[in-house]
Length: 428
Ligand SMILES: *Cc1c(COP(=O)(O)O)cnc(C)c1O
Image 1 (cartoon, helix red, strand yellow):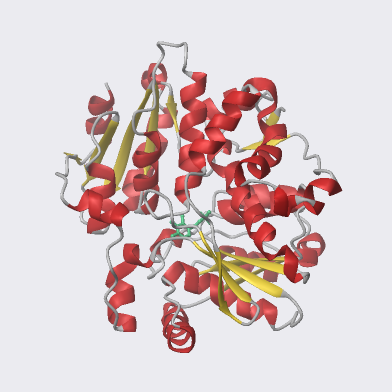
Image 2 (image 1 turned 90 degrees about the horizontal axis):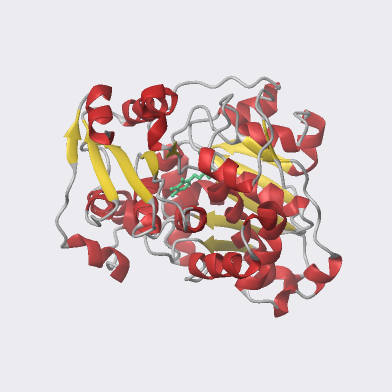
């Protein structure tokens, strides 16, 4: 498989080069040259297949022959070491819980897959790769856990000092080994700016810097896996499926659309956002106008210029009529989100955290138009990760899961930095 840059000013590359580079030299995102649907027999028999077998079929054309079959199967098995249950919440509404992994965020899937691909590519090389990543919370933990002990890869995580939760900080500062945490005196955008500057800095070329957010195809594409698993669980209901993704950088929903292009029967997609409503505005007016992010209670989605939306525009030929066929996007306020969390809990006892609740709201809105459908919203993080919001609002005390317990007593190790020069010195 070849990948082209969505800026169309760089040569096409194979899977390995696209993963190692992250972004094309012209700063465009990589996109696969072709998408070949899977045979109907695959979907007819999907109930009988293991998660590993489904994932292998979904991803193999995108990897091509750059990772041998046995290695790819090992990578998939190590990636999918936990459950992805579709939990009934109320009539015709299910939560696809993506938070049963090591850091209790859906990003575990992409981070584990990508880290193992890089480990494979580095198997015979002394050349080290440095993964440089800025995080506002969940990405850092998933990347730290996913890349721990991966050969030939150093990980440097920048996070805004005092602006991530205690659990999130523990998840990215307590592992040691090849994982280094930098505490930046500033906000998330300062971390992000430093990372961008480093990628453009010729004097750091020899460090082989790469990114580990969803612009990287090895983090983005495996997010298709659990959309297939949702279908596998709900197929027996024999009704059209609507999928709602709480969206920030739009990586998850874009992977869902890719799964549909592989033949997965999803009738309709809903990209549910918080007050950061760049995409809902685009669908309404036809112009894409990013704006600075605003702070909300679903903070992992506080993105004003979603990086993967350009891939979605590519999939729909940037044509509003095509979008209308199976894609909607709605924005919700924090007040609506809190009301939904309380309402879901009071009626069903299901505890949704703020991101999942935004997904639920978008799903409900779309279901009104298609009353005979089944709806699934993604629950992208465990409520414990947002306990400061969930516990007082619902008046509950959440038990601490073992994955979280295990990092609470370890020492935090991080280096404080203020400026880009300090980052450079640290990398050198
Ligand atoms: C990253 C994240 C999202 C947003 O996912 P995208 O793929 O960037 O749209 C939603 N919820 C949680 C909890 C996240 O950590």
